[in-house]
Image (tube, rainbow, N blue to C red):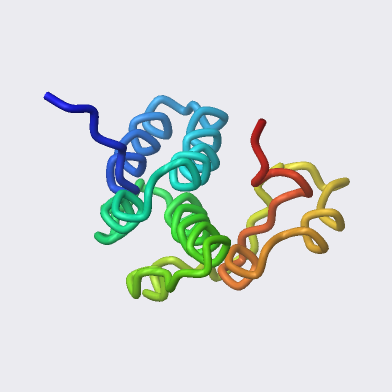
Length: 131
């Protein structure tokens, strides 16, 4: 059986499993790693792995984070994001600073891409970069 790139739905399931175990660090890394997967995929795969909305991770925060990452990835490649990213369930009522460190809030406010900030999700400079 040929290798198949994980979809955003697959990643949401993995995040859900991490959250159930209380492993927030791994859940966050999985969400950020999806951007790298998207960037390194071909155009057809990118469409396939983002086409369908994921089931909830069980956390409004991580649902919003994933939708924001998908929107950011699409914008980075100058393609329209799937319409599901605009569903109201992917927007937080209360801001979430992913780092969890109050001292980094200003950095996150300045450096979060609009795809995350408009959802109430804030990340520090470099959070969406990978080696």
